[in-house]
Image (cartoon, rainbow, N blue to C red; front, side, top):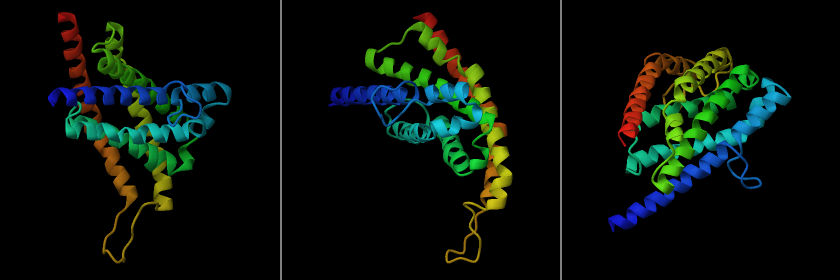
Amino acid sequence: MAGSFSFVRRVYLTLYNWIVFAGWQVKVLLRSLLAQVLYFAVKTLKETGHEHVYDAVEKPLQLAQTAAVLEILHGLVGLVRSPVSATLPQIGSRLFLTWGILYSFPEVQSHFLVASLVISWSITEIIRYSFFGLKEALGFAPSWHLWLRYSSFLVLYPTGITSEVGLIYLALPHIKTSEMYSVRMPNTLNFSFDFFYATILVLAIYVPGSPHMYRYMLGQRKRALSKSKRE
């Protein structure tokens, strides 16, 4: 029974990682559900400028980031060893940016930080999903792939986080004036919520949260590369 579960788990994770990898990188099937975020971002950046990057990647970006919610479920049910405490903040912040900021406030969609955000995210995910796809399918990944998996964040995490914080900050005036997602009293639930102050709280969490995640990934890198040298 345990052997059957292990086989099903391996097949599922292999398919999951390669499907999401395909969605981030290249068009494998015509009109595939997960289109090519990196390809469209770079193509648009080159041809028409950063102002149009969001329009080019909006749907595939939303699909790819929303599908990542499954990673939290994978951790909860024990399909992967990644701690939910590390996965949840990363997935949560990306969903907040994708839906709570970029989708909700068109005023920031043409900023150059959108291009740096999308490129940072997509390169990171291409490396990560392809690495785990190989690991699940073959039981190993090439040493250069291992190095990329645990080293690319040294540059891409700072560029991604800087873009995230910058876009949230740029959206603050529009959040305040629009009062989108805010709930005012009186109402039947006798409840109030201010999305503007909630967003400021999210920004504040980045201050201790970002260095903590960076140190966590440095620890992961040290363990993974040390283990590969011993093998």
